[in-house]
Image (tube, rainbow, N blue to C red; front, side, top):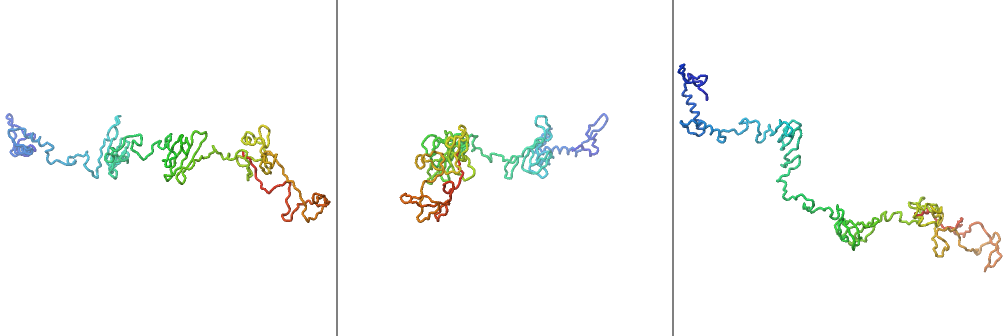
Length: 439
């Protein structure tokens, strides 16, 4: 709509209507019928569009029509897209291949209140340094300035995850059946675990129990004074067997000056065996299996640990105090004050002391006895030819028959067993050993 500029002789001045000027005689502008009808019809069209009936007496109907037509809900032919309105700074519903939704405030200025820098919440994107590259992914990443946080995303199962960890929601975590924070197993309703101190585990006191019961649960127990086939005042561990009718027990008795370790098991009938004490170097040292003063015959060239050669040597009374307490000065007093002598058994046979039996009377312990031959006499064998130096020979009934007898310096043989061996002592067959004494 415009002034009727194209209509000739209308009389527009500067493109607008003017009134007649009687002074100058200038005529006023003419209003062409077509133009006037057009303007009137256009206004009527607006009234019709607004549903208003034209009334010549009213001068506000056009304003009413415009008010009605400007009501958003009553507008016709409204656009339905952002492009229809020319909007370019809004997010599209859904996704397209050329746009990834992004909410950002990258031009914020840090004013010291911690709100400066690029604060971004972006959907479906990867952030590399300060450059943004978009790749489709069901996730939201958070970043502040140059600090990159974790991603809130959806995994392949449709579950929300934060930095790869599952996000608990009311849909996947029902807390109604969860226990409150507690300090005991019972507080959480746990029935398949052992509490500290139960069966003596993890505590400093073992529970008292009837330790003679075969089938007692495995664990640590204590028993004080009472009737038991094990022992009183013990702490023990009960070890069940694969069959409930058998078990083993290892216990430590308290109140002794040294460790007393006791054990027992079950016999074929499931009854307790006798309780046995275990030996250790506190109550049975290997070196104490022989008392001091014990003599052994050793096949090696050197005495074993804990033994000395029986060679008559002088040794210290303090270093070998136990041996000195056992044998004293029986085999020699040494220097009379600080030493004593060991037995000297080199080249000797050992004979038990008579000790009042009368077989070897008047012998004292440790005394030396030289070799000897029992007294006896010999007669010539019948039919023997006598020769050699003359000598006297008793005849029958002890009378001197005046016979000459011969002598010889050679061993006499009986012709069957060979010539006898001779030496400077009378001895049996033997082998030698190193005689040693325990100290």
